[in-house]
Image (cartoon, rainbow over all chains, first blue to last red; front, side, top):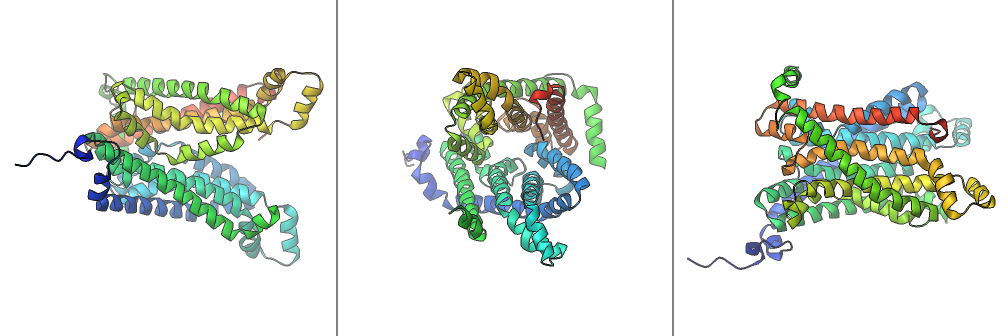
Length: 226
Length: 223
């Protein structure tokens, strides 16, 4: 019998190169699951958020109920949200996606509505005077002008979603959260630290990417400032 | 529907309210944990934010800390702290993780609140011969109170919600009912625990709303 190797894994150190090289596949899989869960939930939330926000802008009476409902959703804790949806979706990735999407909804609806409300009345009147119908006004004038504010909400929602995916570990679909949860139970320091750092890296990268996208699709915002 | 009925039955069973694992004890643990964390976060964040806001410096810092804070998963921080020597100190890791989580929104809201005070009002106060300290405590702080309190309200509700994560790491609070339900594969218990936490979060939100209504009109927000 050979002596156990005296490397950083055996010594259970926080930072461990051997961990990175031996568990590369596990880490990659976890990162991929993390990205999928985050991306899908934010996308779903975005698709659901636009109609209520537009409705609340067009019809004043709708604003109150829409905002109240999404705020209530936001106060439900992530762990509780996953549990409340448990009877509907069972232990599945859909459960995590649905929970996170509901959570992101508040931020997105609020910001899209704020963006739509900030479109100057003169601009809307000018577009109407040029013969724009309600739909064309919405698609070519109002929504583009609401983009900067909406994107700010999207960035916050995405960053929050990246960190909340970890709680999905309770149902076994938490991406890097699974590694953190397992590492906690086995006192595996390198795994917990590596997974945590990767989480933050994903969040920061996603934030910067969205900032880049925002700059690309709203060139007038920069031109105005220069 | 059967799950909801089951959750209702679980909640109304007196046996589940008594004892160390009962709802009553968990509720008290949850409230104490949230209250302590909120108090500590306010003591850390508010003085810094109010002074920075008064001086008009460090705005970018406050916003950046807030954004970075959002990117760090509270659950990861909690587990990381658990594995350090601090982990032997009871609820210590939970308190530290939750405080780190609550400070950013408090900091940003209080800072923004101080900066949103009408500059002309501040100039008038200075023109009347008020010292910097008087301007801060008699003009800026009272006028920024609605936004500052809004930050406290957001932090409080989020703390109630996030304190459930403590249970994932073996801590106390209502989250324990949820995690215990998962371990027993008892969906009614899981849903019952989730309902308890959600209701508590809404009650806290409601209490802040009532407090805002009762506050003197001067300190009430315009919106």
